Length: 381
Length: 95
Image 1 (cartoon, rainbow over the protein chains, first blue to last red):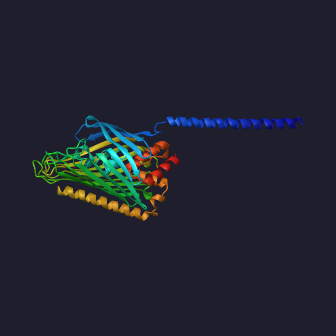
Image 2: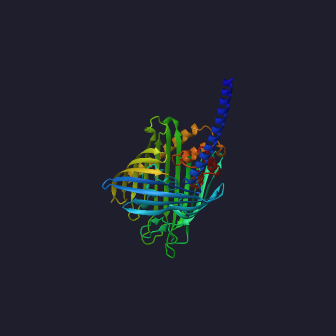
Image 3: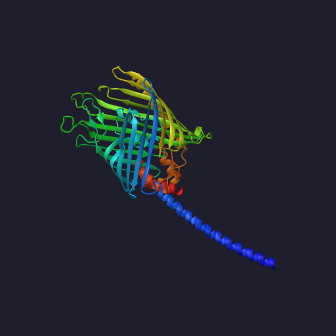
């Protein structure tokens, strides 16, 4: 009998203890959840503001020149004021070509008008220039440098515009069409050599550049685009004020996973034609058409069984830039480059490239071949 | 000069042929065309983000950060409204 009482007492006691323990455990879990929410609320980017960006450092050894190291840090500020309003801005701080630069890469107010239209105002990446708008950040660009046609000294298509843009996309069943139209400070003509500057910090006449891009994606992996920009380039109140510049650009993208290759193929190309009127005045008495572009193919065996091999990426790029035949200091450049990248994470990589650049002039006074090695570490965040 | 121009034309031709072959192979490999509005967020995430860059895992950012990035990329990459909404929903659910 005593044993029975003892057992009943023990069962009652243990039941009470389990109940109390469960209650305590529930309280602890609740406090842990509250604490987690509090900690989360202090994390960066849990509200309307977010800091993103990229950083890169390059080692460059060019044949016949001393090796050099360049670096850049480009923070991106994003502020989501409402579900329809966003501000995006990128500061570009870089040390290159023996100097230090601090630029506003872009800074744009964005308003989502409806499902098919977005309005932007400020400085924005040129929608007609696919490479600059989508692919130029160091952790996205598969080569450690930019193609000639968007490189600062040999640019023939504006990298950015200061003005206003309207853009959007619409599905067509399984396909998609993308569109953008913009207006901005136009390019400025140099009357001494017929080149134009795309810096656009101010305009030299009241005429604005008007342009746009339309692209079609018949399948998600493929995109074919066409961009057009038109502007008058001469200084106001000069005989050159009506000299017009027309920029045509076509771009192509194909990216897809190929199971047989245990990875993905990435093919891209862009070609640009810049035609400036020949006013037959002063130094400008020649057919002023510049062309440039690039083609690139990359293979990333990310489904390979070997852990080292799956992080590798193989790249080949060919790019060119031809200035007008009779322009002063005319040069034609053709470059081939092989790249080997090693992905450390999904947005950080080591890049190595070997490039051969052939530079010629139509009169035969220049015919050089320059070889170049570049090693780069790039991080997007 | 003409020789160099010819070389670049040959390289461009080879590139265009390569593109055609790759495109043809891809078309033959298509399982079927699903309308964009019927695709799940996970599929749209893979198709759209990988169109330009390597894709980041959902855990890389917080839910609030994905909301901001969704707006940023909707503008930059010309995502349709449906694509942007479904991709952000998927990323937040998988976070």
